[in-house]
Each structure stands twice: as structure tokens, then as C-alpha cells.
Image (cartoon, rainbow, N blue to C red):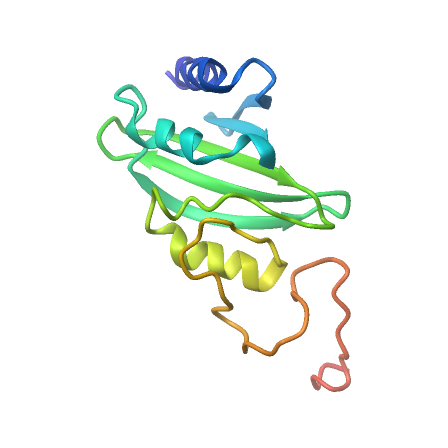
Length: 159
């Protein structure tokens, strides 16, 4: 079933945006996963995943970010409570100006999770209704989960 679902998602995204949209469709621990460039993640793709009758990904369970030194990624974990299937969507973005279109207009649960990713990794989410720090103070400098973040361990009492 998972390979069939992956093929279905790939075909629907290709129909929407063209064949070069998905960088890498794979099964990740038996679950479908697609990798997109941030330029290919848009509101139309999000609505396709959410609204298409064969997909119906109505639940966003997790949003996380990863810093890979050469690029950054945002990973969305979607689940269909109606059809009982999953998909992982990885979105690659640059480290210099990390930007990924917000999923919050389609899945309201993205609100806090995207804000956390913004706060800790500095990834911008255009389209988010209120993108601001959620864990750190507003005047905090930098993003502590980035690989290039420099801490003063002595000042933090970690020396």
C-alpha cells in the first residue's frame, strides 16, 4: 500500500507542477516521503495534500527543521485520519536565506511548530499569520540549533 500511495502522491504533484518538482520520492521506514526544493512547496501543493479525495492528509503531526551545513530542511509529517496513511514531506532550503512557505494556512497545527523552527533555526515561513519567537526572548540574538551558532559556554555556566 505504501508504494502505491507514494506513486499516487508523485503523480498528483507532477500533474500539478511538472516532472521536475520532486527531487526524491522514497519509502522511509515503509512510509512515503517526498523531497522538494522550497521553490516547489506552495499553497497549491499543501491544498492538494489536504483536499484531494485520494489523499486527505487532514492532520499535521510534526514539523521539524534540520541544519545540514550545506542546506537546511523542514520536515512535515502528515497523516490522514480518514484513510489511515502517512506521508513525510522534506523541503530543502538554503542556509543563507532559509525560507519555506508556511503550512499554517492549511493546517493550523503548524502554528507553534513553525514558530519553534523559526526561533531555533532561523527558517522564515512566509504566509504564517504571526511568525515570532516562541521559546526565546524577542531580543535573543541568533538561532541556537544552527551549526554556526556560537555560544559563550562560560557565560551560560557550562564551562
